[in-house]
Figure 1 (tube, helix red, strand yellow):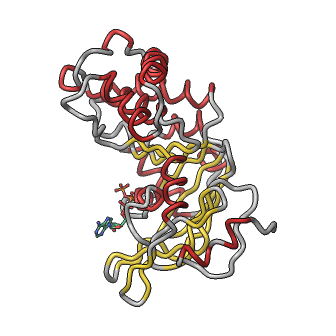
Figure 2 (cartoon, protein in one colour):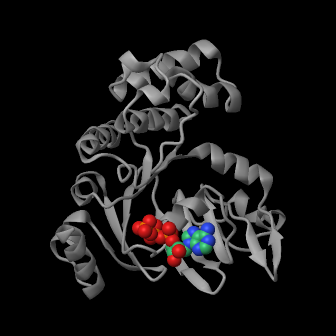
Length: 278
Ligand SMILES: Nc1ncnc2c1ncn2[C@@H]1O[C@H](COP(=O)(O)OP(=O)(O)OP(=O)(O)O)[C@@H](O)[C@H]1O
């Protein structure tokens, strides 16, 4: 494994001492532990994602899928191990009841490189669709207003909402709001897009439109995607790899064809059967 500059700075991150950064991976979970009280949600979890790879996380309710995305967004501290993003250690960590903060520069870079779309669209209700999409680039990335506007128009065209650019979120359906949320995440030009059950709050007739937009993004960009979904046909269409989680660890992983067509683990079979029957 190659030694990178970021390895030398792990000491200052306060998270982990002398440890090699993983090479060639955009995301790496290295023996990550996450607990809520006595509930061990992630149990020395190891997995990594290559640049441009699209990975779907499946598994029973409570197996820790959303927690993984929340940790990548640095919304929570971890209790052990290291999360690496682009070769830099990311996470805040609890150690002996003390919160050891990760290096601020690493966090800023990681936050810039990661976009997330949530189950609930979380749009700014008082801003127009256009403003929702331009706000982040203008204020966080320092993009000129004209350029941010041009890009917003392009992205809203891509998600099929050019005609709603001056509407407010309350005037949109849930599916339309979710498509704005996708455009907003992409406007920040992330390298990594995290998708957390983005269709589960939608009426069934609105699901296909959102999934079609995501299929298009998967086909037309090389963005790295980490996706939690119960939409198995979508997972089959867009993923390079499927990870089946159970009890805080990867129970099984493989290509969508293999996991859905020929699962090996009993718990994967049970989970897929339950999903198909629901
Ligand atoms: N803020 C929190 N405080 C306490 N426990 C939490 C918190 N967030 C999550 N948990 C617990 O962590 C475990 C994993 O939750 P998580 O939401 O990551 O699971 P999941 O696999 O995404 O489930 P689902 O498919 O139902 O969304 C669950 O037992 C949950 O109750």
